[in-house]
Length: 266
Ligand SMILES: [Zn+2]
Image 1 (cartoon, rainbow, N blue to C red):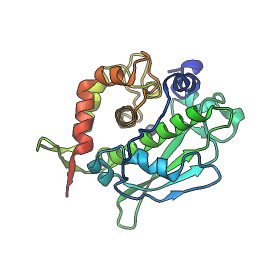
Image 2: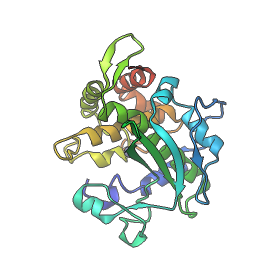
Image 3: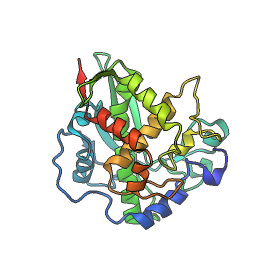
Image 4: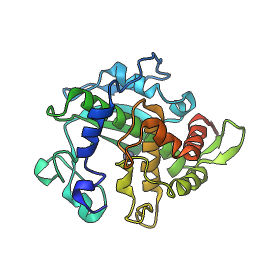
């Protein structure tokens, strides 16, 4: 994607999309969070802890158990810089002057590190959104960012570490091979969301970073999983409803459903 106004990095269209489709971004049904994750509430927080934990509670139990998330923190606003478009590598800035635009918002980010036993762990940063964005739209963006980043904390050990999974049908798979094969199937379809489109080339194929498609597949699947668990439609090229968007990629959804509900075999 080289066109700035169409760039998947820019949320301009996404913000107006959410203002049209979102009425209540978080399911009303009570879901007890399965596990507590420390949330560092700061002056920049835009969701209550309860809403954060309830969003994580939308994920299947086995997926929550496999998440490598340690903590969630709230930070000052952050944007994609113009360099993201020039280099094709997403780059951040806190300086609005260097941003692609004031709507090239980065709503969330997952950082990875190794713990003292050498195990891969993660922390999620959620970024404050500027007050000119309507409260309900801000809430939708925050919630989507959280679901997207939480999906990364479940995908990462599968994509970047050895992980064996027992699927709900009893089959045992290498998680990396399973996701890469599913990713190749998803490449034949349009990106699940406007943002996922930032990781596709003009011919619709995944962008390749240093000979590797893993980042692009990880983004496509973080967005697909967010679309599966959240009750509202993510902004997508075809302006499909949530149900139409999922139905248009039913095999991918079925594969990710199996992945999320799988049990790790040690
Ligand atoms: Zn992501």
